[in-house]
Length: 248
Image 1 (tube, rainbow, N blue to C red):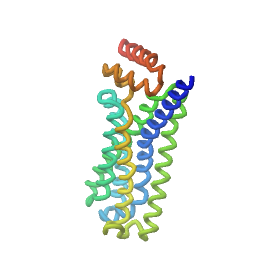
Image 2 (cartoon, rainbow, N blue to C red):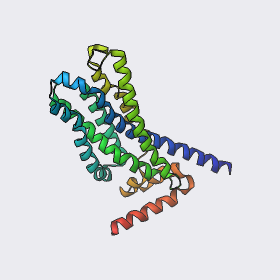
Image 3 (cartoon, rainbow, N blue to C red):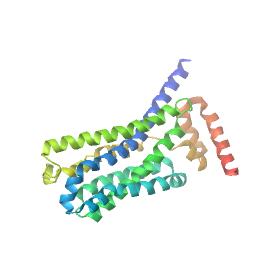
Image 4 (cartoon, one colour):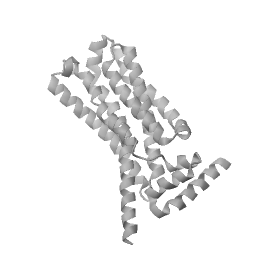
């Protein structure tokens, strides 16, 4: 009996770890959406842009978000949930770095669109991934953490911007390394983005995707870690579900 309790405890901890890692995508979603608010003055000064040009730069991420959200599901079915989250993490890193080094509006917009692709993919894939690894009894609670992560990312982006501006004396003032403060607002995002990327390599692929790819043995290993002795039963349920979907 004590062995079963120990196994259940380890499975619960593992599921919670996976959930936290996946919801880092939601955190970056919120951070990337909020950080742009503190950079408007810097963009206008650096690019000498009009209000229309600045508005396009600020809103360009939304275009990428729409495309990312539209394509994420199909790509995840083809290449895997975790693999798509890894791609999103890489895009977050490229976007954060590139947005800070951009020297022209077009260059900046391209990097922001790449960040938008990551935002769109993460907004779809993180909750989908969690729902596929979480037991039915806790699925609702665990997927709701994604929403908390998004709000936390928004909040911390404003906090980060505030302290950077306070330390430097303004968003357009020269700060560390001789770079303007608004550029550092983007670069701060590199820390959670790299954390997200590295953490994704310690969590497994979705067992549903593994079964759909014909990797039943690997799926059973993952389900064993997630659900203990109930792994075999869950594997059969996934197989039946996928068979039904294919039939329809």
